[in-house]
View 1: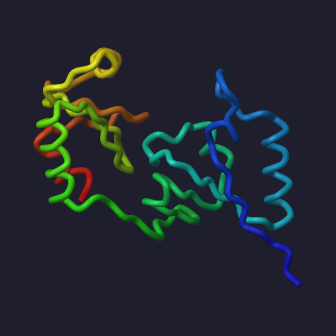
View 2 (view 1 turned 45 degrees about the vertical axis):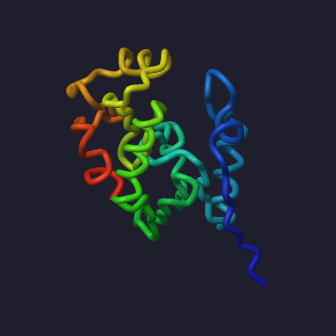
View 3 (view 1 turned 120 degrees about the vertical axis):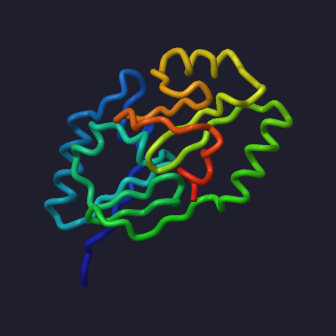
Length: 160
């Protein structure tokens, strides 16, 4: 009988403590022992890959389920991905703008803020101030500061 398991672990509030957002040594030890016993370790998170804390990546998981299952990796190989169809994305952006609803868009490589939206909340203004901008219409937040793109290309460049 094979007792090997696949262990799925969340990040926020599970691996990472509340502020200051660290991985306890006891957790690191438990993960190491599980790996030594032949179990596969997977991160299963609502976060996209772009929002993965470096400290988590350094723990050497066997696989990652990102974005609520929209991107699945094992041994650094992409096994599955699903994104919003281009037309639906464009319709969503148009509707959000029409209804003056500010939103952020997540992709596997970036978090995008629509600077062309007529809705400009205090939160959005603070985010745009905190994040270096190279485009007046779009703010991208990524750990690696991936170059920003024009907001008219949100869907066709990042969500197709």
